[in-house]
Length: 371
Image (cartoon, rainbow, N blue to C red; front, side, top):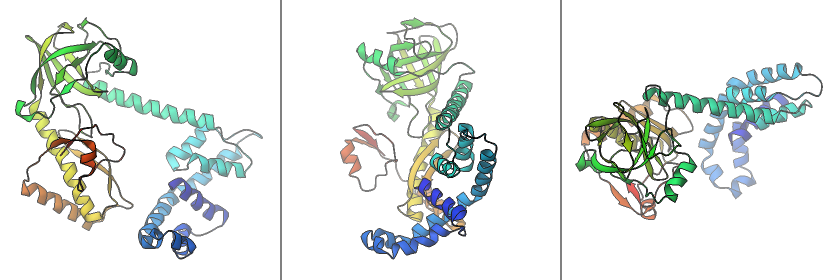
């Protein structure tokens, strides 16, 4: 929708010479036409539609003139028959909010094509840079060592050898994050499966684990895996198709072997600081919907020991009064000290709970844990 809207805004400003706000001013006309009779939700939600269109037009207006000037300069410098470079098209997309199809349309109006293959390469380069930055942040937590992930081939090898997925004990609060377990698989570099290793960084799969794997916005647990008198520091925990991989750093040259009996210990004090932040994302979700209405939808979150971040969709920024009301509702929930309960239920049954809020785009297991 934003792509269509931006094409309309550009056309109105550059081709028709209309003043800013053309599209939002057209909305009441459309709602009063035959389309309004065919789609009664248009006149019913007209005020919200106009507000969203106006905000989008205002947002794009801040970069539209810069983008038009940049494109003019790029096209003016082209040799006859040369395409607009993919790098230039990507800059318009990434920095100025011009969708590729809009850039291609404007270039075509001047008889110039866009190097779309170059655009895709530039897009992939950015994806690669982002991935490397994430890996660097992860490596920093491992004191500079390489991170460990399981690729599809590694997961397939576990399945082929009859290794069952890890039994999760992450929500067994009575055990306070301690469990006896057995090493069922070992990875020395994230893809090479070995029977035994004393590598500087190890990926260990246990038959059962009290560690919470990163997911649902909550960071992974940290802690230790004890092997006799030796201790391996657990610095990251990820789940791959149900196999919980613990990335560990041995305290010395300890050799770990498949079949070894170990004691897994979660840093329970750290978990105790993460969990309330996760609970508060639910409280914040509830408060936002109470204040702003059902149009609010969660789009992500981050819960770590020090803070929480809650991402949500809403057509405009919150006002100071909105923020005060949301803060008041959340504070009331905290002061009430209501108990937090959970249950594991079939996914269909969970979806039937009227007050349940599922995160858009999130894949849930069946059965699913409901809080």
